[in-house]
Length: 119
Image (tube, rainbow, N blue to C red; front, side):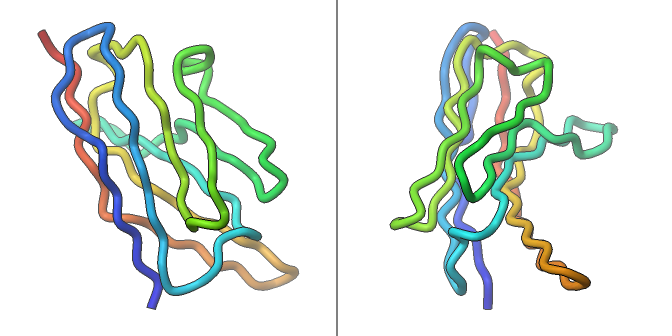
């Protein structure tokens, strides 16, 4: 059974920083694309950042230069360092693991961690 333990969310003032962690268990994720998605109240879930098995990264335009995604395959963990946080970064952040091999797809989601940026 695949499980995620997400941590690091909370309340922070604008301009502050948080570091999210997502520790996975149940399978090895070294060959998965790992990512973070964000869902604001009343909004759809949007991609924030992803990191491929080769550690190449992709970011939403709104977070480029402020957020950094990284992975530690030995710990089966993905991180999201969030700096210079803005109120519009508020939302529930979900960890995702995706692998596609031919006609097969494995797609797993965490339960989410709340991030609130407010003064």
